[in-house]
Length: 336
Ligand SMILES: [Zn+2]
Image 1: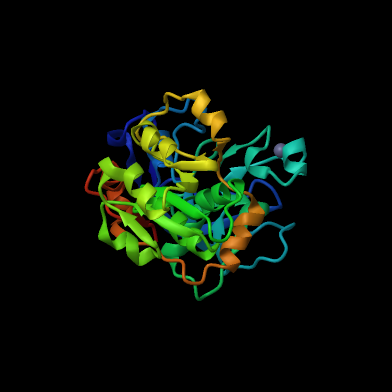
Image 2: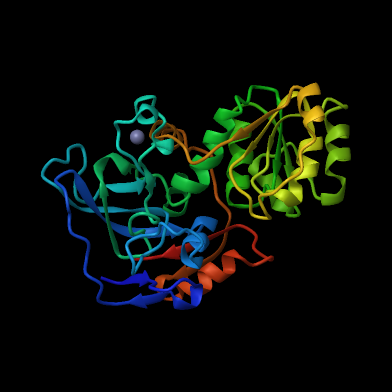
């Protein structure tokens, strides 16, 4: 089969090879999936750049967010058949530890990520356990499907962790980014009043009630929009660059949730300001299988903005584009 593979870290070392051995079903509960579309995410760049020492196997196939068609099933697989359209939940988990038993499979004590501790989906085929495979209906396009397991699930879980309520003010930083565009739409679906921070006018098309385009006046504008109350929930997946604005935009008893640090991870925190406003800082990672199922079942009206798409042959270019300052929407790989 064809796949993008690297042996040494670096985008320049990621090569498309035509005759990689097709994955075999190692266990009777595994499913072989023919990959259709893969969504590109910062995690793919982190894997390829060599920043994660636990990446295996080497040579390695990256690709965390995958949609495709069931090609073969193991003897113990039930409820799936050849030809089913599916997406892959990206967490490898044991199903036995205290976290898994609490339904928190994404923070399994003995887990890891597909595409980090296993090969990923920038390949014609990928084999994964049945418990990671979720059926999608025919009415869902491949681009949206390839946006649910990472880009969709991450903000969905984050908003659930932040206990976003109807009529609350939700502030989304980076609202035209991958997770930001979905956070905006989900916030609206959950009944919040959404303030999107984005330089892109199209952020409004995703249901934002207010769009802040001036990054230097975020706090001021949130104050105006909320009549001084400030935001109940703030989503900051951008890290240090947006930290001060996001922290100052949280209202009394508000929550700030983070699941990414695109601009850097080390921030300054005024603890007095934290406790006197009774602010909750929430870390969030991935999402549960139940949440992925909920997203799939309630995907109506969800949309993704496509910026660029590439063939598997141009995977290097696709990963470079992900780092581009001009990026405005998602990048997809058409794998087969
Ligand atoms: Zn576990």
